[in-house]
Amino acid sequence: MTVGDLWPALDGLVFAWPWLLLAVPLPWWVARLWPVQHMSGPALRVPWAGTLQRIAGQPDTVHGVPWLAGLAWVLLCLAAARPQQPGPPLAPPQSGRDLMVALDLSASMGEEDMALGGRSVDRLTAARAVLADFLARRSGDRVGLIVFGDRAYVLTPLTADLASVRQQLATTTLGLAGRATALGDAIALAVKRLQSVPARDRVLILLTDGVNTAGVLEPEKAAAIARDAGVRIHAIAFGGQGDRLTVFGFQLPLGGGDEVDEAGLARIAALTGGRFFRARNTDELAAIYAELDRLEPVAHAGRVVRPMQERYPWPLAAALGLGLLSIWRGRRA
Image (cartoon, rainbow, N blue to C red):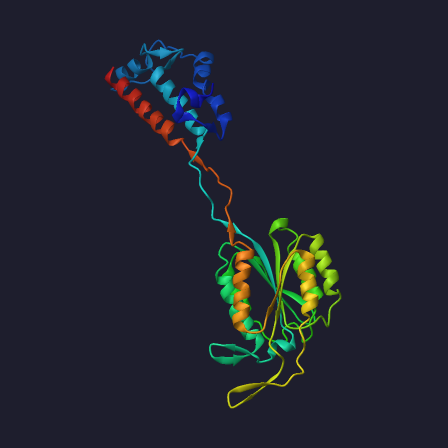
């Protein structure tokens, strides 16, 4: 049988500092070890000497300690021990997935073969606009941003401050990381950054418009490392049909642009359990990110917790009331 069975209001009651309960018998030990010494005459004559004598000699004591004052002391010790009870269950803010986004900043991302808002823009501008919209919908996630060219760099570590990620995304420029494409190094860097994340939440979204032309690791070797680390890669091949010539508002393909390694990106995605996508324009890229929203749910429920609630004000208030009552009774006696 527990305390909660006898009195449901005390269910789950614990003391944060239970060692302070050892002070409860202190007044009785003092009264027993050092009893009051009665003098033959008063040491000090004051007008209220009679009242003091009545308080000191009142008959309602327990082992030499007035019972009201003793009970007030017990309650004071209980308050000092900090009684606590579990509060009602609370659901913390939902926590989502941890995503690394790797964005290609090679020279080919400067080709103006995309349309955005009725005007012709380069691939990087279109990718930034669609990616910023994707991030705005990932409330509850932690997102990190990697950019790569000749080398791969972490522009933003994993963070729940998605506004900062979008701000850093807006500052990216062509050639910031070099003009080549270190695809394998970008994958390896993302895997390293995701090592501390639970395995089921390790996701990399890789966006590129070319083939691997730089770096230390081959993309498929890096993908094998990602697979072994439990990182799922969704690869997006982005880009139109290469260089274009604009004549009287009409865009004519010239050819000669870098081809996207669709087969290689598809193997990378398949090897890690992810998906491969091909986007030839802004609308297709937006549809891909909408599909990623469905593939990677935004949030999962956090663990329900019951915060401890302090209960010391009740015995503290009762101790104060009993102490005042003890003084009042002594003055009335």
